[in-house]
Image 1 (tube, rainbow over the protein chains, first blue to last red):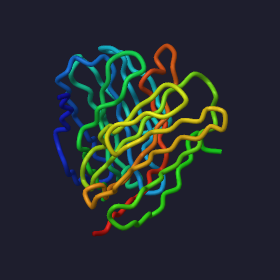
Image 2: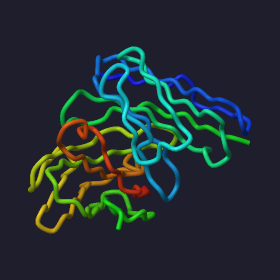
Image 3: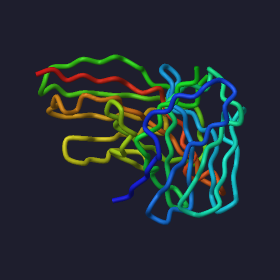
Length: 112
Length: 114
């Protein structure tokens, strides 16, 4: 079974802090993704990566950056956390091509 | 108009009922479709995926795609309390680095009561 592991289940940060969310997958998948999930808005794509050191913006990249230095690891960075970034963050991975995403269990981030 | 529209519910049914969950989509490029189930405080897990029009069955679950009317459905037969979850439809577009970039519906909250 594919395992996508997000390092934290819950995080509480203060406004203005730099926040790192980490994600690791164990199936040698080429593609990795960061989504955020909010009530009434569903899942929205922040960034994705289709190869090491490669990244593309998703639908809502503002206020976020990403890093992929190794194939199995994809990090989401909030440069200066704001209260409107309070959300559930979901990492996912898949093989190249039209294939289903495998999700981690999410990190619930609260910014106060 | 959103690319994928899904009625958020909530939907409440008795155990044993047939459940119908529906989504519409607005883009006609080559694409593929998925249904995910998400339990509380968990990530979404894949239930079904399909590339073509028609029906696909897996146990009590049937996914249906009607590309002419841009409609996708998930049917759950003999629903169980353990089916209580949020169901998410998703559409993926093919081509280049677009693979894997899914667009999700809002999700439908389903409760199956004993």
